[in-house]
Image (cartoon, rainbow, N blue to C red; front, top):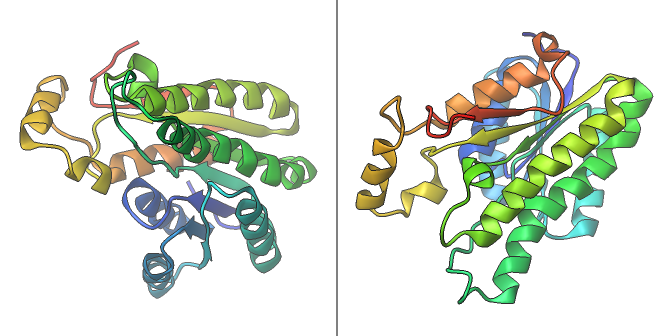
Length: 247
């Protein structure tokens, strides 16, 4: 599953799923451009990758800002030479019942989780078209597939990523570029750490495998979809949820 010679750009890479994905891609041989808002955590990640013999560079980025996206991807391309793997992982939550949800909370989640993916794809596509090779992976969610009370904004953004994935897959398939989504279920991250123990226990009861997922479970799926083993897979949603949702 060697990714030697490839360069990945990973958003939301400072922690959780994004961080673990960056580590896994580096382990498989890719050079990794890690992007997030927290410079300190990005530097720690780059140090961990390079200490292990990999290649990485940090690019501070707020994906809610279009100009920052353009500048970061240009800087990564200039420094590393190309970007032929994109992992759109950055995401936030602003949970509230829809009748009480404030418009800024709706806009912030859609901008960060969905619009940023469109903007990142738009920036990397020209180079992938020239290379006639590319891998785009959008990190969606099981709640984009089944919905979740109190998360109308989050579920809408993650469902939107699935539609975006399928549209992009059709647009670029003729140039040997694949675009797929991964829909994680309940994964141990900083985002889920804040949930009550009661909620976590109730969630586990809905998972046939009987455990909460780990970021490594998602990272393994990302590594597979970027590899040549997945070269004939595009426009698909890979569910990594322990059986929580079966479709």
